[in-house]
Length: 141
Image (cartoon, rainbow, N blue to C red; front, side, top):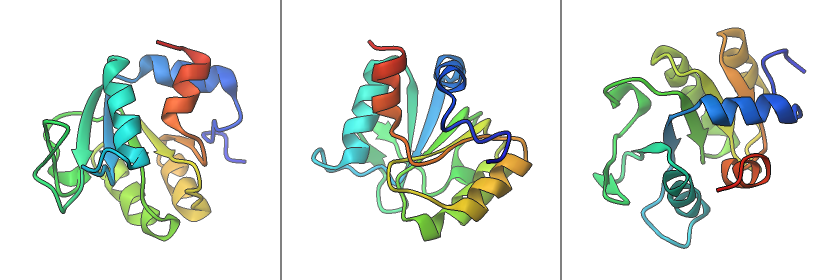
């Protein structure tokens, strides 16, 4: 486990969620039945600023949607990834390029090389966990 992989450290996860304000959600779907949409709604209700990232949309949940992380104006604290594992390296490279502070891979998203690349670049990394579940357990609403 890389020192910046905080997936199993409950205190580090809590601190990350408390220190995060802006979350770019890569792969955010406009469809309400999709997990990404449900998680985004929860995170926004919990007080986070969400930034949809999906090249197929112009807005999601009433928020301007960007085709890639590199198109987002302004700082990003966390990149929350709802993409297939094999697509994560490109997202990790973008997260590094835009100066994100953390890369969070959702449940079922496991990309060891991309995670190591992000961790080596100084990002906090969370693998195979859900932001909504972890927030509800560690912080609550």
